[in-house]
Length: 134
Image (cartoon, rainbow, N blue to C red; front, side, top):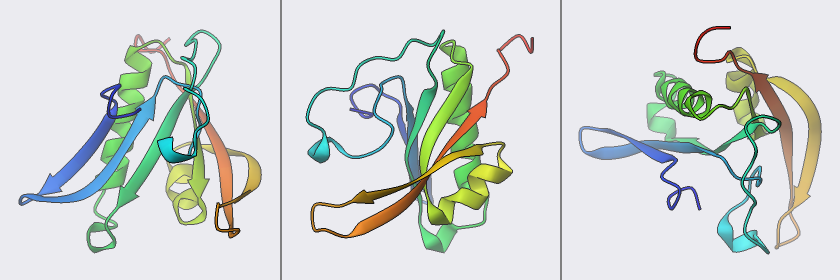
């Protein structure tokens, strides 16, 4: 869905893809299309938070600011569409980055994967300034 909506991005260095991530104006907070039972509804920017989705940075390129730049790009796009907040479901290794970028924890969640393995997440949110700075 992110690809179809043209809100998913890939960062490349010297011709190699090193990171990916996106944002969404749809209701799904996380999870791939393979786990979705129905199409995620469009969000209302006046009342809903845009979603930050599917971020990954190759460990070989970690700590170079790539993820932060992609996050900034996604947030700017969400603001340009009228959203005043963004939410995400962080994997535990991502929590420090998101906290450093102004996200606050809303709740801890454990999701059981189809193979029965539980994966812990932290749902996080960041309020955004409107494009005019007001």
